[in-house]
Image (tube, rainbow, N blue to C red):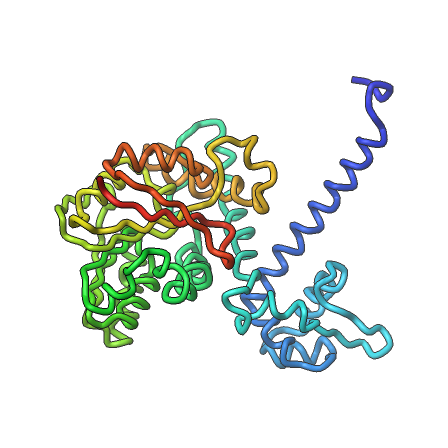
Length: 357
């Protein structure tokens, strides 16, 4: 195609957009660094300060802090006064970037960008050879996932998520048996166990690292009603044992999601409820054009959710399996009623309230 066949205005607009993409991706990477180094937290408590003062407050190397600040200033995150050589994190930005801002700390989410980038070589190879990249290839996965879960799940469990199911809070207060499948580091289970001491909570996860962290935290909190096991979610093998089963952004990662859902259905007692949190979206890409995080969710799916399933020879559903596919699979697993809800604080996820026939 020669230049005469190109709409030059459209081409230039696209080039400008791509330059913006590169800049914003760089800001995301540096935002992750700012979170991990505590620089945002330190700056939130400071008056306009020099790079040396900021480095001292955060306990970091001044030269690195100064260069990071350059990225933050040119990226529109931090304000700079050239006359005094001072930097300031506006309060309007700090409410979205600091640990004190939880559950609204978007810097936590920015960590996924470098984490996913760390496996780019393996993903590129999989584009040719097929297969996938295993969980073990992702450094810091459990740490980042636990931070994300603390914001979207744990912080909202008692006030927003559990009340979605009519009567559930009262039942938990009286005492029931509950299971969290794919419990990771156990934050949700340990939180619920602390709030509802009359109920008994179990957490199953295939990761020994995650289960070890969960057990250590339960012991630290003195929780006698929380237990954790290393278990394959696709082989629960239990019958009518639980009154409540939860999964939080778990099903789409599974190698055998149909078997997981069937096992959950079998493990529920009559009158029990399955509460499934999973990515909000459609199974059809054309219906996701207005999704507020469409590119991000398809990216995290390509570079984590789908590939870890394929690495196990699995179905490779991916994060954007969508509500249509979810409803189909829940019906196939033996569930009779499915209600889908959303929460104002969490536009990323759907909450499925599911019961057997």
